[in-house]
Length: 264
Image (cartoon, rainbow, N blue to C red; front, side, top):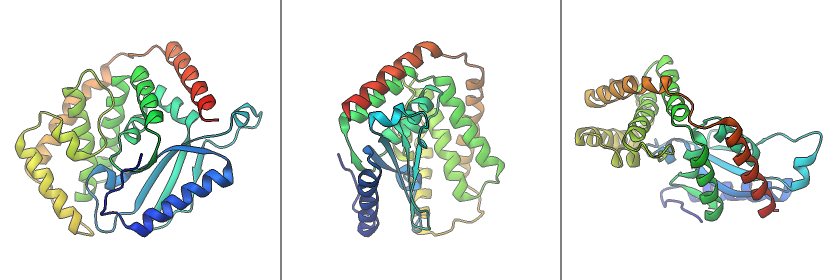
């Protein structure tokens, strides 16, 4: 599977492809899923946005039996253009059980450099089976709080807006705990007022042609939407755990061992 928009720089995409190929050859890992994260995948890039490639990898079965386990992340050189790193599937599974929302987001990224659809579908099904809406909601809520504590610039407001939209999506979809990654889809699949969608679309256009948004005030309709959603989301702090940890860990072991055997 590959889904790379025409607007991405072909030379940058080619370098990302080359890095992923070298990692598989040099480190002996399998990369069944590699996507774009960050503002490009979130739906509000700037002209100077870097490329945030994130990937999941699986080591050889014997590597998981060592008394001296290897690092569970792989990082490549970071610069102003490239931010390419990935997580071991073992780390990914543990984080999913512990309520990390990033795992589900990567699996729903609209920009895919390389991907095994069957692998993605199995991992999504596993994530859904152990997802705890309370933990996912608190994840998004606390991300917004941390961004707000740093001071709200228009650029940072986008990050807060996306988390607020994720929280609204969760409220509108009580049967699911894996919101889409990108802001336009989050708003399109939620019962937000049309004025919110229009204001967000207009601000995205401005960000797409402006290198630095500065410290201006966000549109009032979006500021109210964010404040309302974050206030409603405080209830996530009071939700009791949904998944029983022992059962979730059993599912995690079964899923992980199956994937290692399948991808060996």
